[in-house]
Image (tube, rainbow, N blue to C red; front, side, top):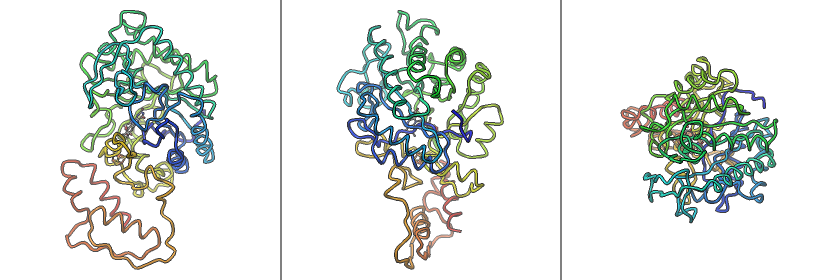
Length: 430
Ligand SMILES: Cc1cc2nc3c(=O)[nH]c(=O)nc-3n(C[C@H](O)[C@H](O)[C@H](O)COP(=O)(O)O)c2cc1C
Ligand code: SF4
């Protein structure tokens, strides 16, 4: 698979699946918008390999052949714009939700996950069950390939099933799937081999892993580097480095006060371990183009951007065109993550009201342009003025204070990334 850019889209769950796990037209629109906006690799969020692995009511699935057509529509839509489609497959494991899947979660060992409400109390699987789960990963990947995917993402991070095998904290097995790192790696490696055999040599195999679990006693960077070297012996095309588990969610999804690039040093260590055998990318707050460029300059092959492309589907095109001030910024507020977990909601974005409803909310030219007065220069008034002007109205914005941005300026004193939204809107109003 050849990509036209060194920026790839990290999977971001949108809650745009139906209750039966199928990808909706809105889900297809979300992906197509990113392809149209210049992303060379568009990623479908984690699709479950089995109903039992579901962690959310609107979780996407690849556990039945009937779910293939939604992915086929996505592949067709993304390919229309010359982009490639990667589909992520996942199984929640100990971080599963009994009240969603209606069955007790399963995991390598019976180690509860106390984060979230209700907590999750998994049951340890038998060897036969593990082997069946490997087969379910393979079948899901085959379905994605049948749908026309160009790449398969293996969700091997964030404490879900596959990464829970690697951690000595959550894998306490004494059989061939537990014990030494090599034995804890057996399940992930067999998943990788099975998938490669099923999808053939032409579809890329991408593996997301933790550079560290950020939990005492869990996977650390030296363990991760050793595992990455094992992966490099397998037919894997790219390793994407992330980090954290549900117990360290603030690390997986960093906030507006965290500096960018928190996983870069781990990714460089992993690159050192795998050399030229596998491409390595890294994720986490890399949507500032200068930061992304500096990460690539340090020797990594790709940068992987999740929320940056959630906030602006046209991110890559704007970077290419040198229109950096026009990029709708991600301010790391995590509203998308909160909403994703809210029943009935989709993963809306605080800085882009179109996100997850791309077709319906696209700004159309006003049939009868008007003169509009917007009263109040907080971010809501600013956004309204910008959007009305884009639709062709003649807009005046009035603010009684001496500065624009309202309370977001105040909030930015403790959450510095928030300032980016005020600066962006100010630039758009100029
Ligand atoms: C709402 C939301 C949903 C996410 N869903 C997934 C997912 O399905 N699979 C996955 O591997 N990572 C998922 N992530 C994690 C992102 O891919 C990424 O690792 C994380 O947001 C940090 O990178 P960023 O700063 O570029 O967003 C999700 C993140 C968010 C905010
Ligand atoms: S701005 Fe907030 S809601 Fe939008 S993508 Fe970034 S973190 Fe998510």
